[in-house]
Length: 313
Image (cartoon, rainbow, N blue to C red; front, side, top):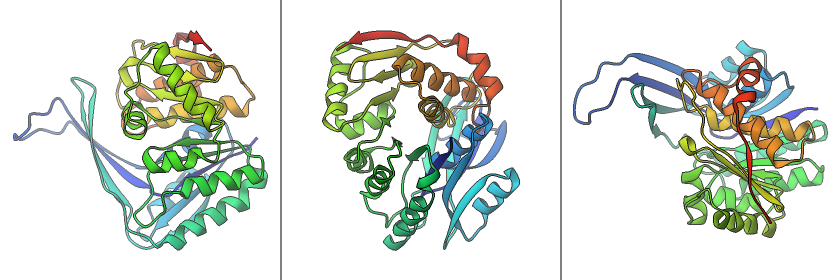
């Protein structure tokens, strides 16, 4: 069992903690946390902390942030050198409300040929890959069919891939039939023009999208309202439970790691996948900054994570 992740647009998350935000006024910062990040990087770290072997294919800017990150953690990575500095994302976290406001840079513009270099690097490791995880934004200069091309490469090796993206990247990538997609509430609306809801009507419409693209699982993370997982046969819902939230930006990527873990373990029932994924997300929420779930945290949250069948089709 071996996972491969792709990070085309890594970043440094600078999390600034304040009690609350009053626009137009000065604020006293409680704490500042800096984490090298990106969806693929975060999923790699989470899976590593779950005891899984992972290969990270990642762009490495000339500032050396990526090289330092993987070297310090002794994680396996295929780094593709690119010019410029890694982008900086500002995360403003209100400790009184648990609300997060984000300011994300686009990243250094790159030549389209760099996308070809990434695809070539991924193809080289696909023969030993059990599950491929694709997600996140891409830098200016990368084509909208970037994830589609990676997904088609995965198909050639009969490797299932998970896609966590939005907009054209998601729509194009879906044409390569990922095993699972996971937009959040905002991304789902931006991509499909429909607000997700915990209703049979919404789940039926999501199911139709999945079936048109031969996708086995469609998740939607709803933040404080829980999470949904839809399959061609049924829809499952994990309702919100009490969590001591200390940081939110790692939860979605921890959720993806939970789905990947369950799929690699050959769990196929929707409730099994959703329970593991949400447990991973909750374990991450209890950690400050952009920190990923750990196995001990997941084991603690697993029995506390409710999942029920919402409807069948």
